Length: 140
Image 1 (cartoon, helix red, strand yellow):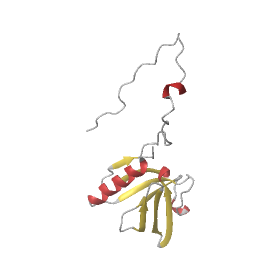
Image 2 (spheres, helix red, strand yellow):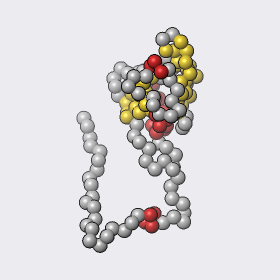
Image 3 (tube, helix red, strand yellow):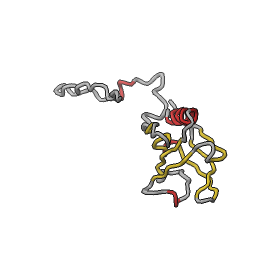
Image 4 (cartoon, helix red, strand yellow):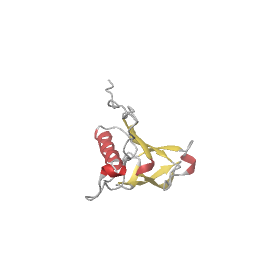
């Protein structure tokens, strides 16, 4: 399966923009492929305003985010692979999302693959691991 991160990123960008707010992304500037002005990076991270009025030629696809923006009055090309985007949020409210890690980004098992064959069966003297409850909770 393909990564779900670029789809979440585009959906949240659209939601933030549709509500008249300013979308910002938090980027891990130390990831390979990240191209941002070094003077904008602090402690390995950079926050980028990706609002339509702040950037030109904004492109968001499954590979990443690309645009041109001004930093200190000087225009710079910016390129951020999707894997380097840590979060997207609205500047005005802070509402948004920390993007989840990709889990199993590669293709799924083929039709001839037996998923149970990859796992070692538990030893006879081992008790099965206890089942965990849901890890999500409602926050109001």
